[in-house]
Image 1 (spheres, helix red, strand yellow):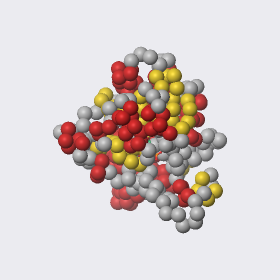
Image 2 (cartoon, helix red, strand yellow; image 1 turned 90 degrees about the vertical axis):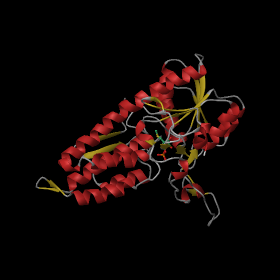
Image 3 (cartoon, rainbow, N blue to C red; image 1 turned 135 degrees about the vertical axis):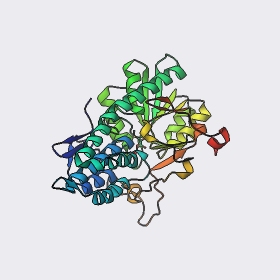
Image 4 (tube, rainbow, N blue to C red; image 1 turned 180 degrees about the vertical axis):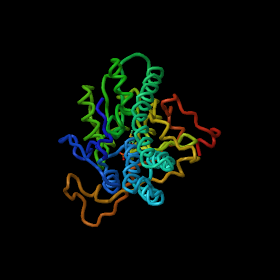
Length: 338
Ligand SMILES: CSC[C@H]1O[C@H](OP(=O)(O)O)[C@H](O)[C@@H]1O
């Protein structure tokens, strides 16, 4: 499967996710600032993908700050902090940056080798997580072809390749287990409408798009057999931060008695955080909401609340599935519900 990001001739090459679905083009990024910009405007997006981009950006920094074979570690660490801070919610970014910074003692080549290792592992780990999730869904829902609901984009674009929740859907569809995939458009940046629609069409998987607020209605109408979503950070107690709109799907799934399965690599687990109350939720620019397709739709000066993510409490999550299988939250049932 084609990779969404690569290290090529001393620079990062990545699919420009802002251009899809109407244009498939590649960005070539050769400076830390170019990578930070690409992450912040979601040209590169998706928790695993931004982790890999962050790691490769540190490799760019280490190469730029190496003279006569000596790497200026202080300068690189300073830039690494800027890279890790590019977006606050997905733990994969800070996790990947920390992992490659730990290799600074071996110089720029060691940093690059670790970043490339993270890239290669990402594809393997997400394919394994998708496989574990597909097995669980079949166990939970039986052998009949399924009507699945997903949110945002968790496919090969959001990872190095294959995907997490959408990777599991891809596997289930390949085995003939999928009747239809419903997915939310994912306002305001339309990752569903632009990217998930593109991936499902490319894979030949039957699909229909919803406005985000129709997801709970589809669940209430009995149109869904299982919900599969990704994650940006999973806490020790099993609380899950994911794209805004995930929480309302989890509430509706619980009421409808439909399994709600989260699929993510272990790099998305953050057991240093006790619960979702500790997660920093990225708030983005009001203009993303007040304009649509470049046209102002709200009166000038309209106030906006634009969180990019929400937190789904563990008690609404049927299972968090990683490459190692079902994640076992720590803490008592009371702590998990807190
Ligand atoms: C496998 S991608 C995980 C996660 O990342 C997305 O957020 P964004 O598009 O803002 O980068 C979304 O929450 C996905 O579920």
